[in-house]
Image (cartoon, rainbow, N blue to C red; front, top):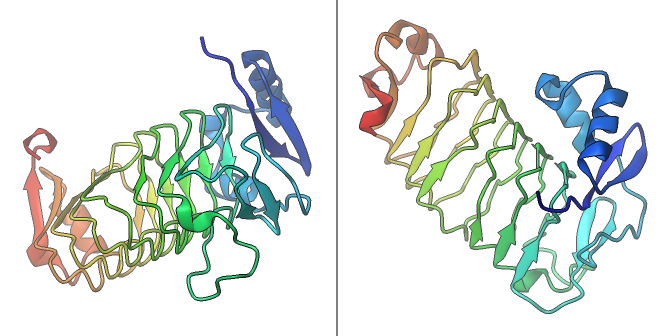
Length: 256
């Protein structure tokens, strides 16, 4: 088993994780397994402030939870294995406000995320100019506007993480290169306008495990022709999509 090396914030303290024993200790402190965390608890993990000037193992410093400098001039950033949470606004890139302490971010094209990751905070990657990022199957929570306005992302098929349970409001709004979206069986909640204005989106698959879908998740998706759903679930999804009933298409998932 590879070495674990990362950080998690718990009750206002940043704790380093170097082993499975460390993870077990943290789980015991929580009094529950990570898979039992509620949406609010996962969100709270991403919202707590980091100390100003906090520096991670990649040599990157944070200011008010925003990544602002990359020590090595490289087009790739690898989040350390063992990291559980990407904090709110950590990779936020203010597209129209350059020159305010965001040195080096223009060069980050590839972002590598570890299989230990469970939560991505609100606006974590908003406006970022990366071209490639793969979401690990371990991610359970994607916060509000987490990938909003990432119009440089070269992602035609978005296969969402196997463990994803909660997706925030406008999470992928304006990601204009996404053509297809596949949700997996653990999804419980998709909040409003999650894919609003994804103008290249042609179809999406949503399983019947979903319990809540907010309004307008596909508003402005001008090329959307099909919302694929499992056979026998049309009545359930007609409640979620009262204005897009003509796009609901029942299929076997394996046919996608």
